[in-house]
Amino acid sequence: MTPGDRKRMLDALGLVDWRPRPDRIHASTGNVADEPAVAVAADVVTDEQAMERSPVPPSVEQGEAAPAQADTSLDEAPATFASARAEASDAVAEHDQRDEPADPVPEPTVEPSTHGQPGDVSQMDWDELEAWLATRDHRGASRPVFGIGARDADVLIVGEAPGANEDAQGVPFVGRAGKLLDRMLFAIGCSRETNVYITNICKFRPPNNRDPNAEEVAADWPVLERQIELMDPKLVVAVGRVAAQTLLDSKQSLGKMRGTLHRYPRRELDVLVTYHPAFLLRSPGQKAKAWIDLKQIAQRIAQS
Image (cartoon, rainbow, N blue to C red; front, top):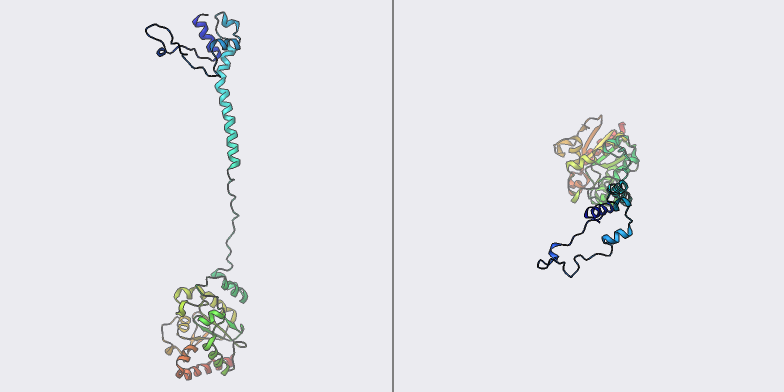
């Protein structure tokens, strides 16, 4: 077989022509070294073995060009490999998609409800208003102090905020000051069970019994306003300096504000200012003035 025929045959079979490496030849003798030039792996065949396993077409033996079928198979090999690789890639991709968590399903859009918001208390009744208040930020207090008394009364008594006893019981004006207030009301034929309603501007006890600040007043003001709307009283009695100044938006002292009727801002509603029972316990000498205020309350009730 000529070297050309040999090359064409190897090309048709996809084999590479083998030659001894020059560094394995002894320069002095020109012979190949006694040790094998190439260690042939078990899965690699020699030229002679390839010829025995793969019959050579007659045209190759006769020195003609390799048939087109052989060339075509070699040309299509990369395409076949690419196709197999693509199929493998698709299979891997499909596997990855199964293993990866599915895209999170977006939560259904829920329109925010206005019920329970400060601007919506104007639509609440007594029970809804009290239940809504219980869901608000307690600001460190144990519980809200909503109010107590006859909800259809003509007289509404308003203090500034709950104290420690009120916070513990959830009822306004309890303890010694509350008992004094009850005796004062009893003296003019009134009681929290029958014909007055008692509440505070702030519904939660401020820390350390301090005066409520502007933020606390603003947070609870809508509740008081709704209570007034639901009651529709004939008279509001502001008990103590803080309550009087807040309700009337005034900086005057309590001594200057008491003794006369005031008008509730933006309402056709009279406001009477008097001393807080806790102040009267500390200053018994002022009870005579408080009695004058009580008689005004009695007169207003009689006129209604």
